[in-house]
Image (cartoon, rainbow, N blue to C red; front, side, top):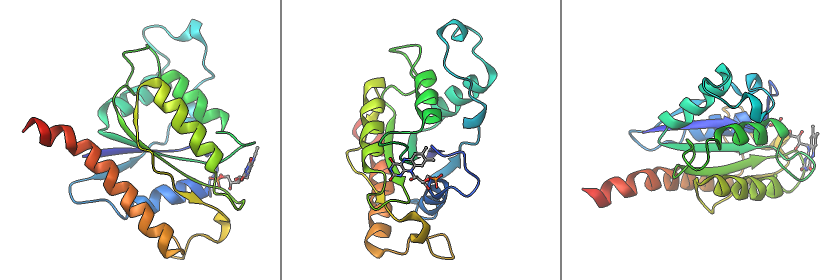
Length: 185
Ligand SMILES: Cc1cc2nc3c(=O)[nH]c(=O)nc-3n(C[C@H](O)[C@H](O)[C@H](O)COP(=O)(O)O)c2cc1C
């Protein structure tokens, strides 16, 4: 099972990228996590450019999503919402509508912020946007607040409860991938 992880932050020392790396340590057997590294190259959405062939960076994004069995997106909160680069990437991935790469794709949203609330508004916005594209979005959230102090030297979460919730969320995402396969067997 292939999980595509996307960090909504382009920052080198991003807490959200760190959170995805922590999730990668918790995968159930048979799952692998690929951290998408092409977000910065995705151009601003322009319907005039949304033709065949799509811009190379967009093609890369769409095919990485299409190849994945599930998505795990970690978003920072920028002004109570998601970063523009992340929204822009989802806008590209959402086309052509409704036959886009996100349709029916199991997806989970997590987030970290340096404030106390752990990007909860951004996570809610991201779930809403992803649902609109047709992705199958888990209800769970993982609010990692005070992110500057949230990780230990091994890259795991300091807070045992948050650590457990991250593991549960990754397991839940893997179950969503397996559920249709099991019911078809
Ligand atoms: C433009 C901008 C807007 C921000 N707005 C919020 C906000 O609304 N709420 C919040 O909790 N943190 C906000 N922050 C702080 C981010 O949570 C913090 O920079 C976080 O570390 C970003 O994630 P990253 O470490 O993955 O880059 C903002 C930061 C930036 C740069």
